[in-house]
Image 1 (cartoon, rainbow, N blue to C red):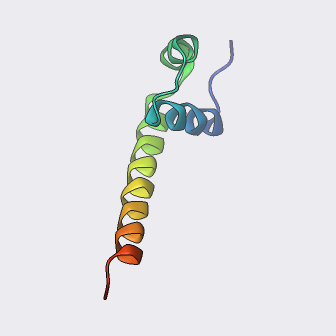
Image 2 (cartoon, rainbow, N blue to C red):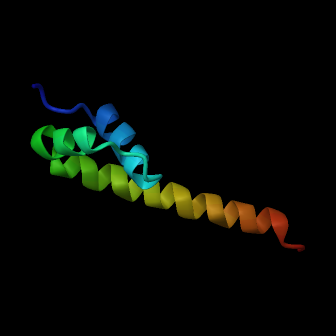
Length: 63
């Protein structure tokens, strides 16, 4: 099977981030994915998550 593209890696990280990653996809990630893609995608997911939390709290809290 071919290597993962970066967009496939983003999809896999998103699924894993929300806890819906299948065992088959996880095994495929470990066998065919690039570690550097997973690191970048994971960091991007964390930054987006924290940014979303900051925006949500800013909108909810009174000024």
